[in-house]
Image 1 (cartoon, rainbow, N blue to C red):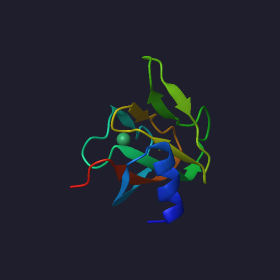
Image 2: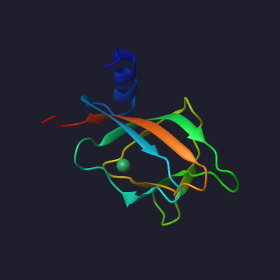
Image 3: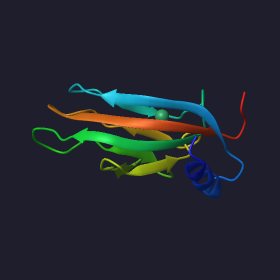
Image 4: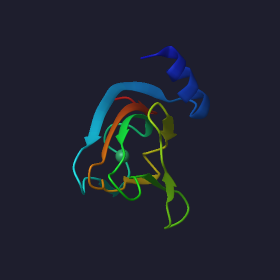
Length: 116
Ligand SMILES: [Fe+2]
């Protein structure tokens, strides 16, 4: 675990610790996405790194959806290299479906208040 990343995340969420769990997630087919959910199994704080976004042939690209205090989500479009830190254990989030020709690859790095 990069200590600079650890310090940065802990400055936002005091007391969290790295879980040592990172996941590579990719969406590479039309219609692939993720329904609204919260992350409860592995980690509450989720560092999302956008690795690659191949834009669709036409139309709008897939956004990350974050439902904070409304049924209307914030739509976030990360470009490759950008990072978003999400309190994924309590904030509902989703990934819009891929359009034709679109691909998204992300890395998620988990932090938690309680380690097993
Ligand atoms: Fe999630």
